[in-house]
Length: 93
Image (cartoon, rainbow, N blue to C red; front, side, top):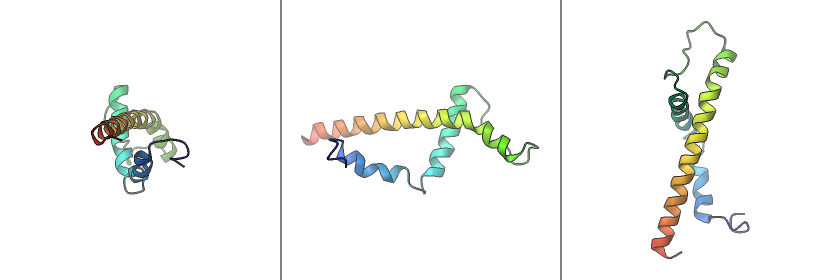
């Protein structure tokens, strides 16, 4: 599919290794504090011992998590694109 769409084949081959089930928890645990830092909220996940219900806790993590995921996605895409371009420039692709 990557060849048919004239996409970057190297990036298409490496992309599944970034979001597999082994790396997803690490991505989520990195995204939440990143989103909180941008929003200026206190760091740390909502406590499990708090009186709020589990649905309220999930709702409280939504905005920082989505913002953090967007930041990580843009950063990862920029680094990946730049790395591939630099690698191709030196390899003569």
